[in-house]
Length: 605
Image (spheres, rainbow, N blue to C red):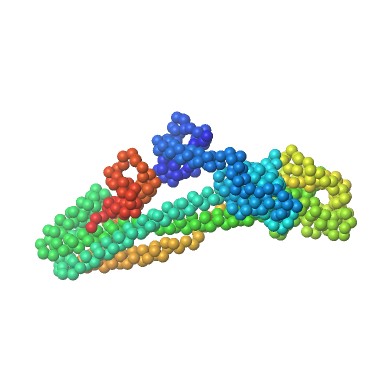
């Protein structure tokens, strides 16, 4: 059995967003159920932490095995499920016609369908064939049965309610066991989980942003208040001193830490001879602290903005996948469904020389064979050909082919579409009386329902056919334009930006407040005759030196918090700085998150 390897594992082991090539390579390594020494060596060359990788895969496979055991236990033996359902939906066969609602078993079957039995069986892990077999044994008289080739028989029904019920069953079976629908639902679950995780991070950031905004505003107000009684000459001296220290700090290119810069500046400000020196030092400290917190605030807001934009993209994908599921459900639930195990009549055609001609009705008027539903006979078989004989002379002639198209397949497999009236001559016709009904299985898994003769381009041909074909075979042998254009069940997932205003208003308010704080800082610096422009170079230096590190810390903090929430059991020793966080997160995650961010603040008041 293969080892479970997914992008999240590789993200953790690789240290960054998974590279698709690396993921594919590791999944290839894992396919035989083990990573051998050579494969691990290659993984290390790709930059993957193989210790973390093997630990992650072991944990995932333990979970997977547990889940599989649970599913298998739930699934159990088909016979056990049959016995269970027979007790629940007990009914004897009877009635004047088993395919009408006079049959008690058909009434019981309707109750089972209304109860969601098909979805329940699929959810328990039963395959399509299992489900058909279970239905056949629990309700033996209603006419549903499994064929050896994997297709199944489902009666049409002999009264309106029975017809609706059988159509409902086929539709539900097609939907609930469709690999496409199941895959889309799994993708939806993953997308919704990511949005939920992003929303949790946004909710964590909101109080931190609001707290910083309040602290910055308090620092600015305190600075302005303290600066009111300072003499102009002292402001001039302080301005000169601050400018000199900022210049020295910037030119040091990182050799002087921000903490040393603050300490040197405070010491020199306190050496000013005026009694106001202490107030000047306090003002500068308040404003420099506010500048530092603005950098942290910017980091938080940048992260929040990126999460909001990511959610919009994810929501766009969710909307498309929901549309795709709705489309698939509609198509799979319709009569003559898209279910590859439901056989249907198509196509009706003939061979002439090295070419094959198949009749179709261009229902969407695009001049192409869009899907298998457009084949002549897809709904009512040979009766659709007979319906074209308007004059009742037993022949379908050129003037009766006005609405007919043909798809022409050449010897090399190339396909073109033409109007039937363009390829049939004035004296050509299809001989309805020559139709010979058959029910013959062919080597390709399809069934030959009948043959017929015709006159084509002046020659008599006996190679007309009417077949019952599997959809998977049709898709492999015909160029459906829906597939080329990504329409219908072939719709492609395209990521678009969708409306998601859950946090837009809040984020806009934060941006407005940020702009106000910027303006207030400008004014506050001017109260001690310092133009903020002279601070900006140093502030940018701080941002380059510490701002990016803060962004990395934000990402690391989220990862630690998530890990603490997901793994509350006993862990290997962690760094002293996060030990208390993990312990508290087990009890009070929200409080632990806030405390963690407080502990990690770079700029203290």
